[in-house]
Image (cartoon, rainbow, N blue to C red):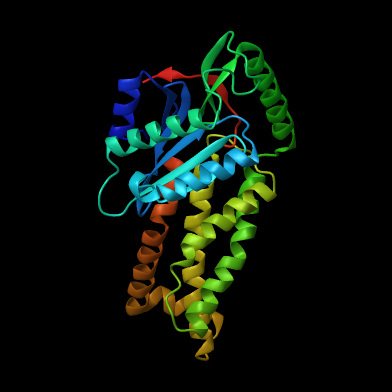
Length: 308
């Protein structure tokens, strides 16, 4: 999702967009701007400046200048890699102002020019300025020439072809997620039985072990994947709650059959069981939202970018 201030920047500067960010040139240098997802706490804005290959000396000078001006520029942290600088603006109380983002742009442009960091209005792969265009590369903005685009596109095609050939099917992935949920269910029961604590928070952990299991068993990644993981999590939560009640009864001296009968006929136990189910589902709600609406497909994608 692209937030209003990022949209405003893109419209003012004639930038392009991905699903979650805007990007383009500012005074010859290339920037990506995006925001954290709505479920992230606290919220934060991200700015990435593409530098191309820079020397260790340039990195050191940039790091020094950014540390000296951190308070004035109002960013929370920054990271420098070989060809880009990443900035994070944490939004605990107030949102990041447009003038704050533009101040960072201007500061970086002046600093880059001072340090002879080359402008990025060229192919970010080979450096040519001929036949270039704006592309979305795995939801990140980039400038490429036609030749580099086709090379990257062919490379992605081969990688995807190999990945798909190794995948099996949805059922295999479902079984894998079930198998990998078992340790989480066991810990859930141990927490409840031996520590005397409600372990509904484990529902949030289990969903990520299920994702690992799906991948480990080489389940097919497609339109149904996110629904299968969500369904598996619901099943795991129900099983964990049932097993917790049964084990608690067995610990008190009941047989398994008697424990199951109590769960079915004792209204007080049944009500408590349903309360724990609801609490477990609430703990899992954010994970379900992430899987169903936010989690990115593993498919590698490169395509022409649209203007906002």
